[in-house]
Length: 192
Image 1 (cartoon, rainbow, N blue to C red):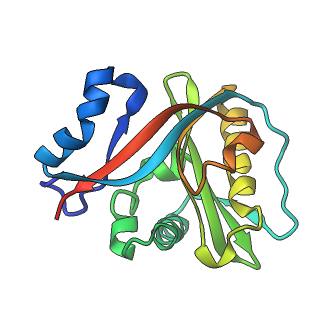
Image 2: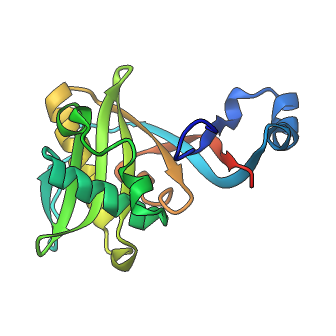
């Protein structure tokens, strides 16, 4: 993490730790120069296929060019409170994100307001980087675009199982789609 210009987070799945390691996690993280950043929840479900999603205020666009990918990255950065360059790091110019990932923007009146993606991973679709513009939350946009990414990913791959890592803010949305919690997570960042 220290060698990167944008350090990101270390994800720890608590259920993979024995009781002793779980009890010592905070101390071990501190000794490694990490600080607790926020909680999360691992979720999975045999939920596909889902019906083709619709939302009365949104149209959906597959991220398949650099302009749409930049819009996705910028939306993600705004939603997570990161500088734009942090949101673009790892996405800008990525051919994988434009062809191998089923990434979608939800647009309201032509403006990107929400995004979600799925990618095939070990026999399932993995949901990644779901975000909604903070000014547009609580309107069902995140759920709708997540359903779109799942729908298109399942259609293209034939996979029926999906998994994700939810933040506390997103965790209430996913059970409505059919996901069930399976492991608590702790996200750690580099200490100051």
